[in-house]
Image: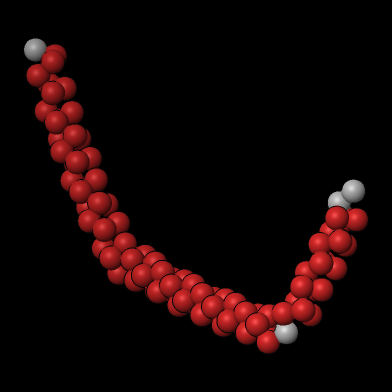
Length: 92
């Protein structure tokens, strides 16, 4: 007898809680789709452009150094030898 009186309010509270959770879920999904997802997509696009620019700059620098070494190989060998000697002295 006592159990049936508390069963209905409990079920109503459970239903109300469930409905509120569904409403919150839809609000969160809407906010994610309207605000967060576009911002993340824009950030990913910008990061992709930065990486591409860095890769292009690195390739350009490698080509520049390669052409300088090919143009004056003896100077390049002397510079690398001096740098190696200095690094060897510093790390002792």
